[in-house]
Length: 333
Image (tube, rainbow, N blue to C red; front, side, top):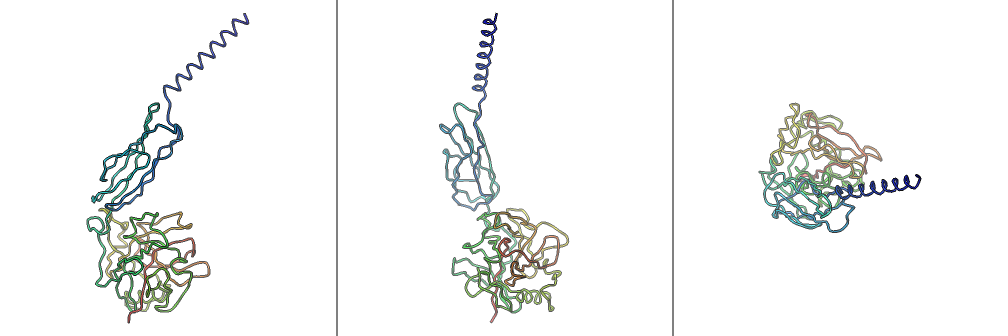
């Protein structure tokens, strides 16, 4: 009897193992998570290299196929491929499929936006000025305008040797410029006095605006003697621009800030970054611009515009952690 029971038990275990093996072979899945990285924004005629990753098992005999919209190639095969964008602006997707003869296929898709800062069909609203300067370091051209005793950039600095664009999306550089920490912007030098700021990241002959430079800007635009600590009511509205990118408004809407850009300052909500460029926030809602005058040994002063307020107030932030936009100034002769 014992021998019979043992034989039955062995047969049952063997049958269960066969069923388990059969089941495993009938419904296997590739291990891991298929993925690739794609910038959120790209420029026309830009080449990008994409690499598939994430599948941990199997490690051989996987076929990768890419299908793209808005690119010069409709599809490519390979674990690493290169695509080139077309001249067409808009939102487009890239889909990646991983196939293997013994496993069900996996698919992963991402979307990107093709933008053109030089085309009014893509980026519109900027009010050009009659004057420009060329940065001799990289040949970038900037609109400038005279307010009071100073010439001001009326677009954000986009010198690439320091700082980063928002979310490190390089295609956004020509629209929003770069974000810089106070230490990067000023070279760690705090200054005061009209036209007496450090060159910092600005082109030769130009400087980061001091507290007094900002006061001069406000006094001219509000036609009154204005202190830096004032909220500058109305100046946020007259300095903000109603602009759009690929048909979408850049500033969030508010009836309390009509964004008239009457003074041609062309302020955009370029957002900010903190934690040494690891955390990005405030795009579409806030614009921040440094002053070269420090608040204290740890913090630098900046001015900001919020989409929901007509003011242009000030605040302060950590010199090495917080990053904001930069406008450069120069004393008028």
